[in-house]
Image (cartoon, rainbow, N blue to C red):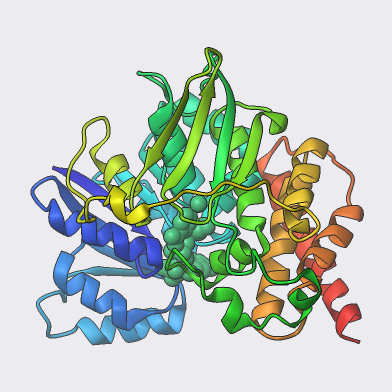
Length: 394
Ligand code: NAD
Ligand code: MG
């Protein structure tokens, strides 16, 4: 029996993870669940999984949750609050695997704590890796932690790697990664109309049902930019070895191109329970609850090169990784602030890349050689991006 801690249990990935846990309750036990503030869903999840611990980051919501469980069958759950508690539960002795599914930079410290503690990390929180690249991979290598990618593309690439492959290794015979992207909801919208895109339009993804932030990232293709950086870190590849391919049907989840001309692809219905179940069962496999792919329904698969004029965020991600140092951290922080401002209708859709590029221009690529330097760059980039947003709105 393995103990799992689900960071971000109430999010889209968290919910899918608990669905897979429930299908394999003889193999997995949810030891700790964490949420930011959605205590109603957390309560339902606790009634089903009865974890030992929950963390509700918001202090008032944590108090409400404590009251909510009184005189219920789950009144013995230990309720913690504050972001430090996230690190505590991700390093508990009874936890073998940590699903890192908090969105954004908020997931960095608990994911890194799990890495240092030698846990099996199921990594959905790409922002944490983009921010902390080398430091994160060093922590994994030093502690002997196992790092399994949950992002569907990186999970696909991992599955296409040679036998015995572990995250961070260089697979010499693999010469290129073909990183697939759906192209999001605005793949075909005339470029001059992007300026009028509303938050509701941006979060309505054609193929995947996801949290708001990643949905906007998919619409701008910053998601693919972050994933390109994530792939460089996870698979020890150079940016020019990663080709983004728009594949609107989202059936192929990515491919690895080998020196002998072989191209391996991983396919399946677009449902995150596939990579989640793969990583939970690894190195074996078990059932995920996802319907088998009906290849005859697919009929056709299309592939296009991305248009960087339509998707400037993708260009900015290549610029960030090529500059290196703290710049990917700056890119990520400015993006988080810009997406938030767009969702709150403070800036337009097309202002997102503007805020990011102008923020990046204000920093030099100093080394990201310690956690302190990374956290400082993150903080400063947020301040710069907020200021740029105020100026844009004026
Ligand atoms: P979501 O918005 O649905 O859920 C986010 C979770 O994080 C929630 O449980 C929320 O309570 C928690 N959270 C948010 N802010 C927090 C904070 N400050 N402190 C602590 N907890 C906080 O997001 P999601 O779509 O599930 O995505 C989660 C992560 O997985 C993201 O990094 C995303 O890029 C990645 N991912 C998601 C998908 C997907 O299909 N949804 C696919 C690939 C990768
Ligand atoms: Mg993805």
